Amino acid sequence: MNTYQKELIKATIPILRESGEDLTNYFYARMFKAHPELRNMFNMGNQANGRQKSALANAVLAYAENIENPGVLISVLKGIGTKHRSLNIQPEQYKIVGTHLIASIGEVVGEAATQEILDAWTVAFYQLADIMINLEKEMYLENALKPGSWNGWRKFEIKKIVQESAEIKSFYLYPEDGKEIADYHAGQFISIQVFVPELNLLQPRQYSLSSAPNSEYYRISVKKETGIAPNPSGLVSNTLHNKSEGDIVSISAPAGLFHLEKDSKNPLVLISGGVGLTPMLSMLETNLNSIQNKKTIWIHGCRNESVHAFKNQIIDIKKEAAHLETFTFYDTVESHDETSNQIIKGRVDLHKCKDSILLEEAKFYICGPEMFIKTQYEALLNLNVNQANIFYEEFGPQLINLN
Figure 1: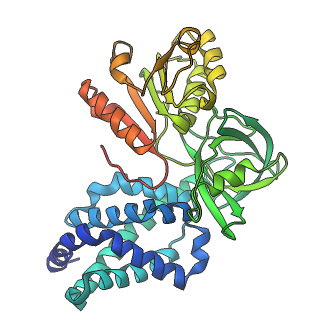
Figure 2: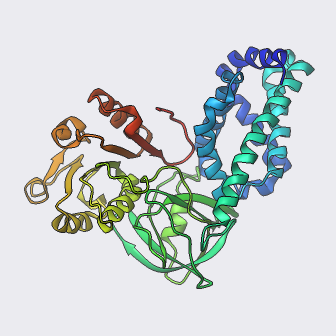
Figure 3: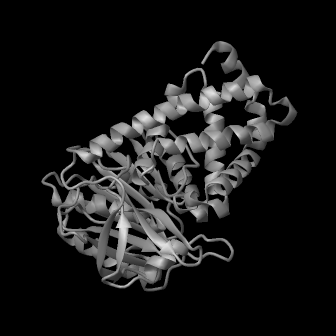
């Protein structure tokens, strides 16, 4: 890409800031019309609620703003790449995306979209596509070399279902072929693919693995989301909650950049909201099973006791783990809760835990809804925690970038 083409890309930044979501509306409408089969690969819930469109608009704008040095986006691109690997995205699909994205840019920019501008964006897109394809090629190769791993989809049997709270069920997934399964890092996720009758589509979703790694099964713990028709949000979680033991689902091998660092001896502070506790539970169990038993602070917030998943498991772990300290916040508290379970009334407030969490060289992990992550991240910065020691996982399309 030459200097003139980069200037043309930068000239479109104001339009992308103002009309980025118009661009993505055009793009997805065009692409799904030309390639309806791709609806089986995209989260149609996030299409309906606008999160996927917002994420794409933000990504296109970020790329334009950093066109002089796209390498600064590499950490974000790696995050996208690991999702793509888990969804089995292939190089030829980038050509489909490129064709419809460039056409959509032409529609949004309108009369100002000269052939030179469209040519510049074509060069820019395929430059980005090459970066992504090469990143993902490395990820596929690395994954293929892991014992028990696989690329694409593999059938697993739901051998056990456990009701963890009023809203969350755990699913124990065993390989249908009885063969070895891949190990994973605590905090990582799998993609699961199920047929959703209401959409007449296969739908993929990512769910964090909620137990310490083992050689027999994967466990995911899924909150039953509620969606209002025709918004398909929650259709996959509802489909899963209607599954029975013995049913078969397809999953991809574990993936994800949000996980415990191997052999790290740093103290851990695990901060979760709602179903965001799932990767934290994997981290907690993994630490319990290790010989290091690092000092660990468990901080969790949810609406009330009825939706508090794994409450008894955490209590049991605390009884046998001297290295564990816990803080639990409920929005609403029954009179007996505060005295019997050491519950704190209100939303998670890290200032109430500061004497415990400000440990030398501690690593802080945050998972939960978007606003929860932002609130806790800012609270840690206000407590003078080193930004480099804060990690977070946002469920769904990446809309926040705090690092």
